[in-house]
Amino acid sequence: MGAKVSLIIFLTLLIASCSAKRKPYTPCKSLVLFFHDIIYNGNNAANATSAIVAAPEGGNLTKLAGQFHFGNIAVFDDPITLDNNLHSKPVGRAQGFYIYDTKTTYTSWLGFTFVLNTTDHQGTITFAGADPIMQKTRDISVTGGTGDFFMHRGIATIMTDAFEGEVYFRLRVDIKFYDCWSY
Amino acid sequence: MGAKVSLIIFLTLLIASCSAKRKPYTPCKSLVLFFHDIIYNGNNAANATSAIVAAPEGGNLTKLAGQFHFGNIAVFDDPITLDNNLHSKPVGRAQGFYIYDTKTTYTSWLGFTFVLNTTDHQGTITFAGADPIMQKTRDISVTGGTGDFFMHRGIATIMTDAFEGEVYFRLRVDIKFYDCWSY
Amino acid sequence: MGAKVSLIIFLTLLIASCSAKRKPYTPCKSLVLFFHDIIYNGNNAANATSAIVAAPEGGNLTKLAGQFHFGNIAVFDDPITLDNNLHSKPVGRAQGFYIYDTKTTYTSWLGFTFVLNTTDHQGTITFAGADPIMQKTRDISVTGGTGDFFMHRGIATIMTDAFEGEVYFRLRVDIKFYDCWSY
Image (cartoon, each protein chain N blue to C red):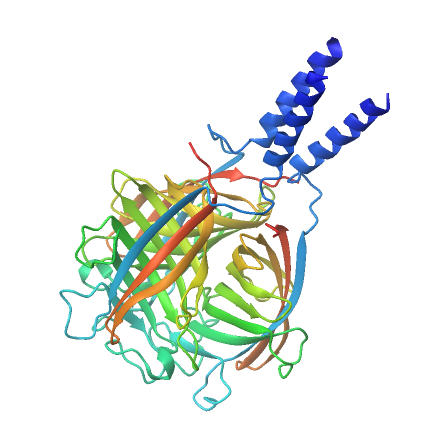
């Protein structure tokens, strides 16, 4: 009788693990990180971490374009920190690009990678997706990872934590992995 | 005896669910959508939904470059419709960029997101991949999703449904999700 | 007794297959390919396979920018070969873009697709991620595939196999798929 009960428990657990993709979903790993973007404006070469490299007709490379910056592409290599302080010790770099892609509001499209290199985290996390900047929180896809984040996938919730004019902005990124290939 | 048979059936079903990744594959969700791209050419600012923002040496930002537009990057915010009518009520926006990347034929590379916002669909679908434009149908990867498309992956089959000169084109996108994380 | 042992073996195998995502991971498919990039420099139009299409302020489109090429975007359509010989018969094309994204060392961000079209391989493989060029090997994410690589995911290890000045470089790409949806 005891054996039968054990078998039932065992099979129940087995089913649970096999159907791990059914809801409700809880992240298998979470991370909260900040990154800091300082756009080159012609006068801040020493501090700038990003640069406008493409602009629509009539635009230039030291000032974001009119019409909600539509058509600008910026390339960045931004410090990542554990808190919201630009001067905290970086735990890695956020590297990639963003595109301003709407004429009627601020939205961007992001393709970038977190390159983490600390005792806690070694590896990369790659993100892609639309960023409707004016919304308080917005979700983008985590499409891949390497190292400690080998084959991971998930969702990142982005918040604009602060900004100063058109030169500095800080994003808070809540990364939730739902597909972890743990070692 | 009955218990034994039940167990066998039970285990068979269990195995079937565990090896769900074996063929034949049927989509767990499908969508057919159209999007409409009107490239800015210097004279259509009011209607244009996309703009050339980068060009090879000798190119400019109001006319696609020679050599099969090799080297042009366009940024877009295109309306998505349920049918092939540009003037149908949009169900969302296709936002991102395309690159013309061959000198000997028309091919592009796409990175973009469908941002859907209707009573039927709330969420984003992100695409990436090569688009050999001259082929009747071509497949690109659906690399991620959010909202109703939480963690989804799949394949999108793209068809050029219509085009007018170098200013307007309409794409039909048959999205087939094979990895659905249903709520 | 024998039946019991069989059941235990059976269940053990079942668990093993259900928890296939536990380590150690062995690839379900592997490929080693090379691709060859010849950047347009103003004098090599006939041979060039890529072109600079965006540059930071002060840069131009026939010479990679100072400061470790920070801010350059190049678009490419490079031949893929099975060995390290530029003149071997191509098995496909590597199409997409790279961005130089750091001011203090050579790093880039890659978004590209292998379009393979041989008797051995028909389909596409899409890559995205950071490429810290100065490291001997670096891993990027394989975010999707089509055709023979339907829904595949994996990791690609990139090595700079050779380079000549700022005009030619050859990358060796060891692709390891860990998620194969075999037909």
